[in-house]
Amino acid sequence: MVHLSGGLTTIGTDKVIVVSDSEGPSQKVYLSPFYMDKYEVSNEKFREFIQASKYKTQAEEFGSSFIMTAYSKSRSPNLQQESTVTDTPWWQLVKGVTWKRPEGSNSSIRDMLNHPVVHVSWNDARNYCDWLGKRLPTEAEWEYAARGGLNDRLFPWGNNPLPKGGHRMNIWQGRFPKENTADDGYVGTAPINTYPPNGYGLYNMVGNVWEWVHDWWGRRQKLDSSNQDFPRNPKGPNSGVKRVQKGGSYLCHKSYCYRYRCAARNAAPPDSSAINLGFR
Image (cartoon, rainbow, N blue to C red; front, side, top):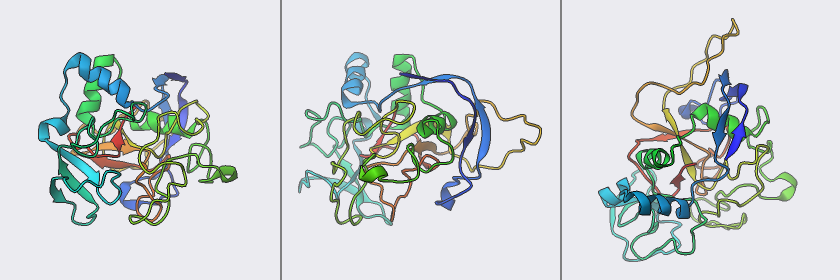
């Protein structure tokens, strides 16, 4: 884990790109010191949790999870599709998909133990954290950590998605959703220690897999800080329907899901899971 000093920081942005996600306005908050894992939780670490606790994930209980069949490496004709997302038909709910069989019954994590675990719900992530005596970061903590000491930048390393022509994140390359050229080295997930870390020594803070955070989703509002009494350790709304996700994933493309940015956000019900959804 990495110790982060916190202090006064800015979250959100005034340069909003996805208006419906309520990325802005920016606001100053105060964070106490905290710890953050250097890496996303791997298949190997999650397997240790499952073996020790006998926990059953929600995808296992429900018997299905979401995968993107347009990209699926296995392209198995035996995939048992339960339903398709109307506006995004490449997303399909498929039977037998779990964290250990991420693309269906014929798939395996045998050669992917150092890749991030996927098909985990917010509730699964919370149970893992409880088992370790840890917790999920708040959205404010996650965003502070992702910025790596930089201020008002799109990505953890700056504003250029390809600094000096080099890839720093695992996202969709090519024409979405028909062609992924894998110019960044990967069609699916990348190992958790891929690409250089940010200024705080944290890996894959954007791209690779979406990461659950503590907060319920709510619309950001400009807070009155005229008296310099900044909010301390904000944790989002007290209740809600969806939990916040941060960082984007390997299935994000600028034309479709330009959310692999520090200030970007997404949300889903806490019992949902997908092939591009993990945590740290």
